[in-house]
Image (cartoon, rainbow, N blue to C red):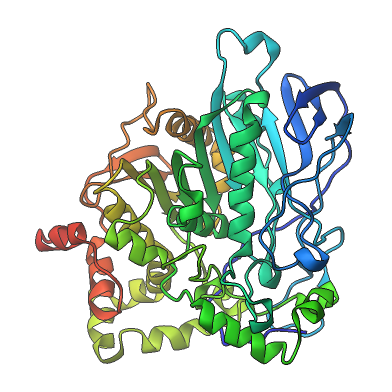
Length: 497
C-alpha cells in the first residue's frame, strides 16, 4: 500500500548496505545493564556493533514507544551490524510496487559504539566526549553503519551510531492506535540517548559530555530533539548539518486523518498485522511535514520553538553546503522546480527576482528557501541563549552538494586535495564535542554566530567571514515569503548587508 501525497521537494542522501562481514581482531568484553558484550579491537580501535537499545518494534509493539531492551546471559557477540530499519530498495519517486531493501527489517533498533579508548588510558583519560550520530536519508532510508567513525575515535571521542524507525513505521498516526504520538523515530533516538547515559562509561565515554550530531534527516532530528521535552538533559551539545526547515510540519490531527484515509476501517490489530511491504511509501516527504510531526513528543515546530526561546540552551553548531540541491534533485523527488520558482513570492515575485538577479534567483532561491534561510534563522535565534557557531561548506568549485560535508567531518573519502580541510574539520568538530567551543590551536578562530558571521569551509581552508554576502538575498526571501525573520538579520539588513 503506497501513501500518496503531493510533493514540493525531497531530501536526498546516499544509502548503502546495513551489515558487513564480522570483524576480526582481539575480542573485548564490556558489561552493560543488559549483559556483557564482546566486541573487537582492531589496531587500537575498539568496536561493538549491533547492540539492541530497545525491544524489536514488531507485532503489538509496532507504532508503540520503544520498549525495554532485551537482556541476556553470558557474552553477546557484538561484531556485526544490526539490520537497517525497513526501507525501500531501488527507490524511485512515485513507485507503486516497492520492495524492501535486502536485509532491512522492522527488528532494527540497534546502535554501534566505536572507541580508541583502551585500558592504558584509564588513569590519564578516564572518560572521553561522546558523539551520537543520527544518519540521514529523508527519514525513510539509511542506517547508522554508513559512516566510519574510526578517525573521530582516534581523535579522542567515543562515537555511537544509531538506527531508528523510518518512513511510516517511524512517523504515523491512526484513530485505532488511540495515542497522542506519531514521532516513533524520535522516541527511538531518545531511547538510544538514554542507553548512552546508562552505559557509555563502560566504553570510556563521559555520560555528562554527549554531543548529538546528524546530517540532513539526522540534522532535522537533532533540531527536533532540542525541542522535545523527553530529550531534555540527555545531551550537552548539538551539531546540525544541512537540515531542511520544518515550517511545513503537520499536526498529529492531520497525520491521524491521513492515516485513517489510507488505512480505512482497520483496527489496531489489523494495522499491526499488515505485511511490512504494505507500509513502504515512495512519496513520504519531510518537506511537506510528513516528519517530524507536531505531537506530544514534539509539542511545536522547531522554527516556532527557537523563535520563542524554548529549545534546549546547549552549544549549537549548524550549517549548510554551498549547493545543496540541483533541479535534478528536486525533480527526482517528484517536484517541479521551475513551477515552484515561478510562483515564489506571489504578488512580490518580480521584486524577489530583482533582489537576487535572475541568474542567482534560478541557482539559489530554492536552496535558500529549504536549507540556508532556516539554518541562518535557527543559528541567530539560538545565539541569544547559548554559544552558536555557523558554517558554510563549499570546497567544490561548482558547489558542494547536499551531505558533501559528512565524509570530511568523519575524515574519510574526501576529494583530491581535500585532506587538509578534512583534518581541520575533524579538529573543529572534536573540539566542539569536548568543550562546546570549536577552538583549535593553529587554526583560524571560528566566530560565534553574532550578526551574520560564520566560518567558510572552502577551497582555501577555514576562513572566518564577518558579514555574510548572502544576507541581502536572504532578507529579500524573508520579506516576500512567510518566514520568520530573526531580529539580528533585520539589523544586518539595516546596515546595507
